[in-house]
Length: 299
Image (tube, rainbow, N blue to C red; front, side, top):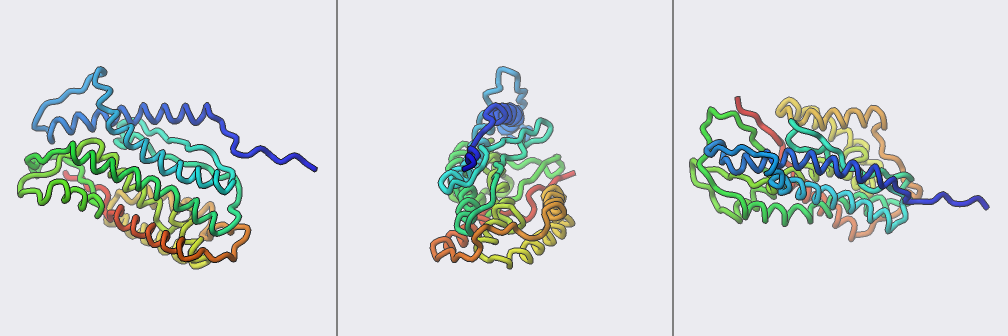
């Protein structure tokens, strides 16, 4: 009888190097975020130095924690169901890109045996990331301040406000007076980026997490839903240039992988009411974390 290949084999060196590189890039951009927070939209002069590198950890540790929780949710679900997968690969993105990272991914090395396994692995990541970003968002808001709004002539980047962000900010500060605005602590920006990543991953397209969930719950109906999602993304690029990168990624996935989600080995298996309820919760997470215009630029 031939020997079974060893599963869950990891190249720890590659994972560690990528994590340290991403820690470095997110800390560097995080230092700038903290300096901007202290400057209160340019009202105070703040010049960070190399000695102030710890400023960047507010952002970097928060975003790596949220992204890491998301991917470890997938990975631990794979371990439970014995579906061979890699540990998370963190993806660094050096300055001037102000996120410091492209996110994190795991690679699943074999087909999913059932729709139940596909669903559980797909939904575990967003739930874990969502659970991590909520306390980070609330604590970051507790460190944030309300300051006079910058003049309309200032060159600024406006962040779209998901429902979760709006609700948490209202609970923390109430209604912000006219002429004032929220000065976000870097932990809030990391949480905002975590919300954006969660929403994009939950889009019901292809082999994104939302695509896994849609295929597991709706079967072959996932194909027209996937095509409708990418068509909507194309339309959104005409309203916000911040949709271009995600739309190009989805079009590339469509071209190389096709419109249909890969079948599981045992396809005809009912999910049960509990997992249908979790699918509804995943839709709720998408609604709470989604913003139609993630970024808007002035001047």
